[in-house]
Image 1 (tube, rainbow, N blue to C red):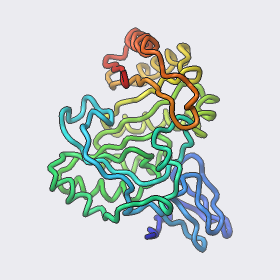
Image 2 (image 1 turned 30 degrees about the vertical axis):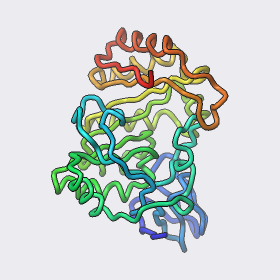
Image 3 (image 1 turned 180 degrees about the vertical axis):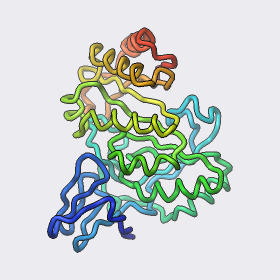
Image 4 (image 1 turned 90 degrees about the vertical axis):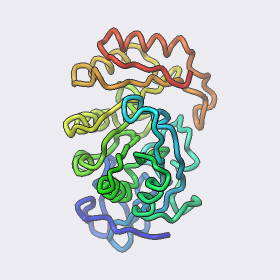
Length: 291
């Protein structure tokens, strides 16, 4: 497994331990251990990435699958992912790779340049960092995105938005579009469902907006967990009040998965009711999904 040294702007020393500064978890990592994402390891007081150059998934998708409906519609996108994630979503559909270390998953050996050449060869106008959480392979994503722009390719980040503002601001000049997963509008439920907090996700949305990155938002309606209409209306009003009225909102139907396999699928009527609420709040482009 190749170890890629992480720039010191993204970590700090605490004796033999290091603190990762990439995301709001601020993991304090002992020697030989990884952070919550399983991709960033402390080796002799230096932080390295286990997720550089080793995607576990490479595919060509319709861009609408990301989902992005207002960015290069009708086009194909080269999608890549590595193992690992900084969330622990109870409903994760890709848990076999998101909840694993790159060390324990079969993978390809592909440099950023090879990814660019693959996109050019298959004539996909964009590259998406998707399937798992691209924040955890930040350095790999960053280098691919820079090279992509040099070759006239667009880049897309499909993310949970759980990244600190500094790293995100540095990345934004090389990201053309993003889809951010906004789980719900209650911090207690956010922590229960994902292991993360709500506010950093909202901060990321505002950072992307300020940087001019085209942003679409996905909200998964999980029965008994994220389907609270009061929370949903509050979320929609926050989006409108903060300049996202024209940002497409994808309201997605839940199907049983991972640690929530005991729950029923979301009733279609619930998704359509939330669509009505979103439109009444002033959101202009609301799309039901997984129906």
